[in-house]
Image (cartoon, rainbow over all chains, first blue to last red; front, top):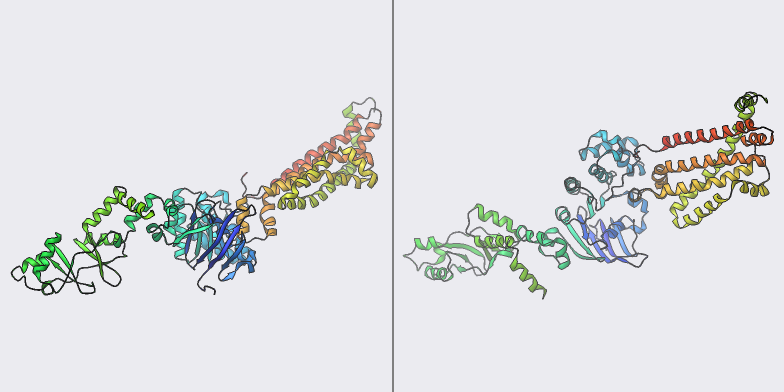
Length: 391
Length: 219
């Protein structure tokens, strides 16, 4: 029952340290090729333990870890490690070896011929935009950020498909860190590396990960893409970890049309008379009606201007004069894109449809005002909602 | 001879017995080197072993320490009971004395390898042996060399006393001087080359130590 599409898989893995501390308990996770997984959580939550189990720097107390479908306990740990990139926070360049020797360490262990190693070193140093002369330098002769760049390319020198990173950028200044984040993003996106990274930095996780795995006390609390975690944090622990500020921001940038739309929009069928339609507008204090068929599919729009133009023939049916169906958005669309459309096209409103194209609500300019207001004034209403949900 | 000053006598002795002194010098040096060499041969692996199996480190270093506390003359006499007169006894004594600085420095040097470097080299797939040979020893070679240097200086001193049990070396000349009336110059003829040997070998080993210490390590 191997999941053919997994590159790393944890099956019911537990880790108990000799002192009795449980670092992981019945841990299950499947990582697919090309994913960028960030492990995040409290210290001692088990994330580093889980990471180090993949290349057998630690061994599980029970359960199985599979790499490319094979149980790692059936493999030679030395050989396994040579095929998995490994980057650590303290970089760990070997001080008495030149940059070139450091980069080519694993290829050397794998007994690549010297010319192939040298070519590989030149290719890699070019990739991180460092001059070739640096190959002959020693680690202490280059800056910390440059050292970690070497640390990263060292981990892929032998074309490893999987890269494990244990808080690789924790010790770097923000500018250098960002450059390195761009580098690893490129590795995952363009070189299709599978990256598993332990981090403390939620911003880093959100911007890099395709999936964030949140750890607490040796258990997975939530495992989901960043957007989903921001929109639907599983519990208070996750919410605290993400931080109120980011959640608020996410409410604006990641909110979907559904979360802000007005439900039960005032609609009409095409069969009723203009007179009745006008009465409906008057009753609800609105200047246009959306027209739907029996299945709540949008078929048109009736504007007050059209009614005025036909004010002498109020016995006409809506179907006779209604305009074409206005542009719609899906309820799962991001509010940010909806916002763009409404502002650019100067629309008064947009109907929101579900994936069966049935009307489920509308977004008006005033709903946008409300979202913005909530963001600026600290989410008072959302706070209430939240405490309700907990009760 | 009587009307010459101490230094004149000293130079006179040197002129007339130059080859004899050189021979003793050589013998002295070889005995010292031999003892230290064997100690290094055994001590470095023991140091590496206890750096790995840390639980062994305390007992091993304690035993080496204990050996060190025995006065050299006493040690020579005790060993003489088993090994008899001659240079083997002195070499064995030197061997025992040299163990502590060599084991301890090897242990300290290897233990001081940065954990990050060790973690990275293991995580990249080095075998334990490769880690030792490619990372730990190159990084601690200068500390190990310092231990050997230390041992050799002590060894040269011990060899001088070794003459009492018939090992030869410059100690022979010193003893001859102490036995002769007004033998001050002869004592100097033995003692000064001994001191010179200790100083020069310390300098030379210091230079070698520098030569061996890997480039790329911050001075």
